[in-house]
Structures are given as structure tokens and as C-alpha cells.
Image (cartoon, rainbow, N blue to C red; front, side, top):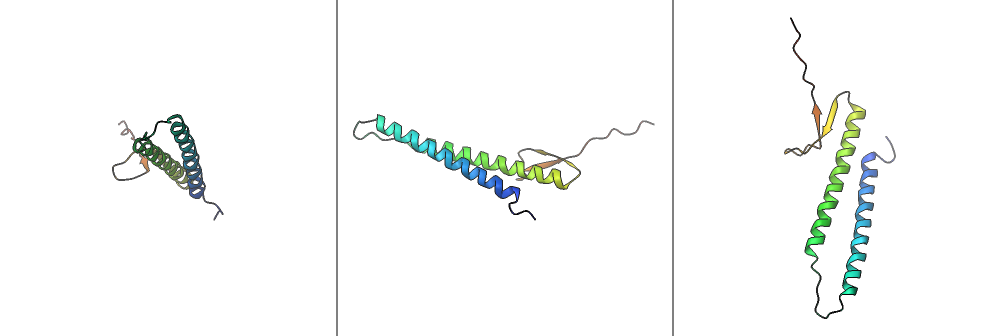
Length: 103
């Protein structure tokens, strides 16, 4: 077994991306609040936080899909694709259609 499996490496990358996005958002909010010197002015945080959460979830899901696809390709002789599944599958096997033999 490897010391750092690919799943943990991908998780670390996702975490670093989340931290970087938080830092950028924090700087943007600080600049916005400094430019608004009016008393009583408030910043609506609900929308940017929700957008950030959605973006982080998409990045995490994409990293999981990529790791699952790499694992499947390295441990199987079959073919797999990434596709959204209503059953929560990250990857789906591809079964080729074979034409019936001509008589």
C-alpha cells in the first residue's frame, strides 16, 4: 500500500482550493466594507457564501469522480465514464453494443 493514497492527495488539493477561495472572498469582503464608509451599511453574505459552498461541493465531487475513474481504470479491464447518477454512483460502466453476427 502507498503511504498517501490518491484519495487523500485529492482531498488535500480540494481543501487547499477551499482555503484559497476563502482567502480571496475575505479580501474581497474587506475591500467592499472599507469602500462603504456609510454608517449602518451592511453586506449581504448569504448569496456569496451559498455560491462558495456550491462551488466547493462541485470541486469536491469532481475530485471524487476523478479518483474513482482512475481507480477503476487501473484495477479493471472494463470501460467507465463519469456521469451524474440518481443513485449516487460517481462512475458508470460502459457496456459496448455488439451487432448480432450476420448469417
